Image (tube, rainbow, N blue to C red; front, side, top):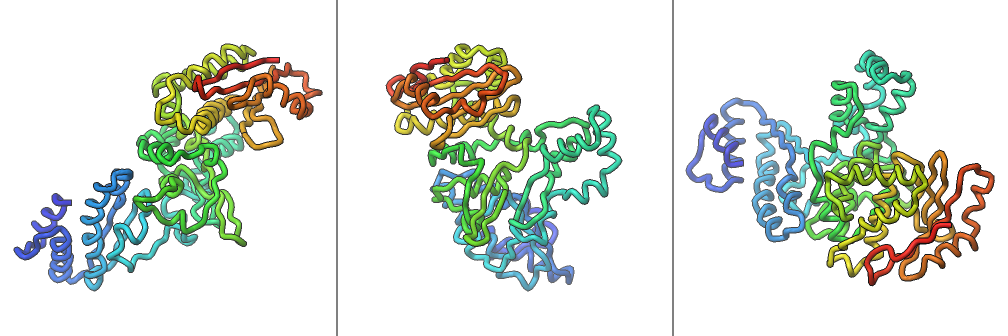
Length: 412
C-alpha cells in the first residue's frame, strides 16, 4: 500500500497535510482528476487478503480493519472524482467490517447478469475452443462426447445464483487445454490452511459439506467473530449452489466438480488423520488395493493407524473426529471404487463395492463389534445384494473412547 501511494504521488504530487494513508489516497484521486480532467478508475484485487489472513486473530483483524475502513471510505468521499471502481476478492466481509464507511458499492456476487464475468460458460467454451476440444479428445484417446462429459465433471459446476447457468473454472480449463491433460490446476495455486483452521476450530462435521443448507444472508457475509465456516468455504470456491428452495429462501450447497472435491478432501486428510502430505495419496492407494483384493484385516489395521495418536484437543469430541476421518478416507476411496458412506438411521453406515466384492459395514461407538454385526443381520441390510454374484462381507466395527481408536472388528 505504501509503495503504491508513493508511486502515484510521484506522478500527481503530494500535500504535506496528507499524513494518513486514507488522506494520501484521497489527495491522489483529487489531483489525478484535476490534472487530467478525467474521472479516476480504481481497481482493487484481493481486497480481502489482510482480513482473511488474520481470521482467528481478533487483535490483528481489528488492526487491519482500522486501517482498511478509512482507506476504502475514500471511495465514497471522493466519488465526484471517480468514474468507476471495481473491487474483487475471494471472500466478502460484512458491511460492518471493512466497508462500514462505504455504502455506495453495488454487490454483483449473486447477480445473474454478471455470473460469467469470472468464468467460462458452456456456450462460450464451444464457441471459442471447439477445435481445441477435438484436439484434446484425440490426445486423450477418447470420443468427443466422452471428453465433453469428463471436462464438465472436472471443471464445470459453479453456480453463483439459484437460476444461473453453470460456469467452468477458467484457470483450470485453460491449463488443461495448454497441456491436453486433466489435472487439479486450480487447487495447486494455493493451500487453504485457513479453511482447515476454521473447520477444526468450529468442530465442523465434514459430511455436511456435501449437502450444506443455508440462506443468502449467511452466504453474503463474513465476520471475524462468525461461528460458521460455510461462508468462507463457499466464497473461496470450494462449495457452490446446488439447489434453491424458493419458498423458504434456502440454498443447498455442495462441491462444484471433481477437481475441487478430490483436491480439497485430499488436502484435509493430513490435518485429521495420523499421516502426512507426502504419504497420504499412497495410503489411499493401499486402502483401495486391500479392498479390491478382499484383505479386510489389512484394511482395518491401516485404518487403525489413521486414528493413532489422536490429538489431545480432539478428546472432547472423539465421535466427531471418528466421523470426519471416516468421511475423508471413504470419500477419497470413492474416487476409485464405489462407496456410499452415511450415518443416518435405517441403513447401514457404509457400502463399498468392487468388481469382486461387496462390503457392508456398521460402526458403533462404545458398543461392541458383535452388536454392530447383529444390527446388519436384524435390519436385513444385505437383502438388496442377495442376488449379486459378488462375495459379500458383513463387518461390525466398534470404536473405543478409552483407546481413542478402533477397538475391534468382526468380518463375516
